[in-house]
Every structure is written in structure tokens, then in C-alpha cells.
Image (spheres, rainbow, N blue to C red):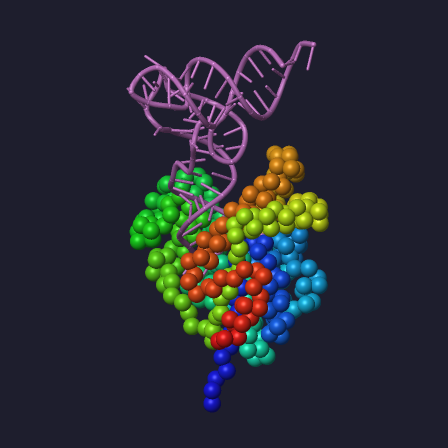
Length: 301
RNA sequence: GGUGCCAUAGCUCAGUAGGUAGAGCAACGGACUGAAAAUCCGUGUGUCCUUGGUUCGAUUCCGAGUGGCACCA
């Protein structure tokens, strides 16, 4: 008896390119559901600034991992990987194809390839290490890593505080080395992936970004940020569109300047996304208007 | 209309006592394993407005033109 193949259709691309609308049309065409892989649309309080799908869009196709968290919730990629795989297991009972879309490359990869088995951070330890790094400085903290995991010390970006901190943290938590846990091998999945990248000319993308930021302001992004003022120091709010308006609310820049900064930082974010996705050679790229061609390609599997 | 000042990177500007030039921002390229819309690394991309002259050599000095700004009419 022939096993029915299950496909995860992955739609990625830079912010503002039109992934949401594209994915919804695909979902309607294949009569299936959508998993979001957007690390900020998880938070239900952040709607305008994350370009959260509109109510009509959410009813046009069933979405998962949209607004499933509240701002104070602790979350991480590993949890997302587990939850997404569990959900896919369920969805593939009803559907041969399911759609995964979002701009968070790390989260997409976690679902498609998996990530290594590392311990979740211990908040108390992380806090302690943060303070230690602040006290002794980045360089000395790097030396600390050298004694714990000399192999990783050789390859890590010593200027990157997040990387150093995480590596030291894992070494202390496990009593071993970070290197020994970094297998970096793709895990087996019970489904095949079809990856679609959406992109267009840089100039057009930048126009889309500027237009979308203006629309966010018209829709009341400033009020949304004011409403979230008490959560300023939450990680979820360390996000383009929010941090720049906090700077305005703190009197550091004019509103006009803050909006310009949102546009600039969104462009940079889009560039980082493209850098991430470009190295994945299994992605086939389309213009956001090429829905029909994409469907044709998907159907050829 | 007259006088003065200015014209150099996408933008704002510095500079070269004559030997084809450099800052900030923007941009571009890259890394990425429980913070990832985060965090970090790298890279000047140039008819020095045009055109004559002086000079071995002009972005630089001189003349003219064009454009912009200011003041005076």
C-alpha cells in the first residue's frame, strides 16, 4: 500500500512582501490551514506594529500561533518547535498539505530541520551572568568562555554578547561544553517541505515598507505603544515599531524622526531576513503576484 | 538687473599649501541553535557642476557658462 505523502508548504520572505495574503490564498486553494512562524505575532497585544492579520484574514483561513501568547509570557524556539510539530501531527490527519508562513528564519528552520537538544535558560542564572558580563566586560567574559569551552571560543563571535552569554550559560547548566551539544544536523520529519520565497526588487520592497509604516501610524500604532508602556522592558517589545516610539515617548526624538527610524530599521530587518533565507538553496523564489505559478509548482510534487 | 557666497558619495558636509579624495547618516554584503522584528561583523559605492586657460600634471589656481542661496535694487 502506498503511503500518502504529507507536505508542509513553507512561505518565507522579507517583512511587508505580502506573505500573509499569499499564504491565505494558498490555504484557500488547497483547503487547508496556516501555521505562523512570526516571533512577534505570537503576542496578542501587539497587533498594529506587527502587521497582525486582519479579522477578515483570520477567518478566511484558519491560523495557528497568532495571538497565542501574552506579552509577559516566556517563550522560545524550542517550545515553538515542539508545539508546531505536535500541531502538524494533528493537522496532517485531516490534510495532505499544511502551510507554514512567517519571517522568523530561526523559527521556520526549527520546524523544518529541528534544533539541538539544549537546556532552556534558567532565568536566575541568566540574570546573574548578565550582571557578571556587565561588571567584568565583554572581553573578560569571553575569557571565561575560553576556560569552559575552548572549541566554541575559537568560532564564536566574541563581540556578540548574546552568543557569549548563551554559551557560558549552557556550559554551566550542563556541566559540559556547548560545542558537544551543537550537532547541527537536520532531523527527520514525517513530512516533506516545499519552500516558497517571496521577494521583489529592492526599491519596490522599500516602498512597500514605507507605505506600511505610514498605514500603521494611521491605524493608531502610537496609541498601541502608549497602551503597552508598562511593558517597555519585556523582550517582546524590543521590536521594530515599538522601540522607536518608546524613544519618542521618552522625549529622545521627534515623532517624525521616530517614524523615519521605524522605516529605516524595518528595511534593515528585511535585509537580515533576506540574508538568512538566501542561503537556503531549497527555497524557490517568486514575486508576490505569482500565486498561480506557485500553485502550479506545488502541484507538480 | 547688480553684488557676494556656494557647487565634492544617495543626503549633510570636510579636504587637497596643485600629484584623481574622506567623515557621519543612508545604502550594500555577511554571521546566526531556547533573546531571532533580537544580537553581532564587514564594505566608500565618486565625470570632485560644465567649459576654456595656466601647468609635466587642475577637484584644487584664473576666466566664462550653468544652477542654487543671500543681500541690494
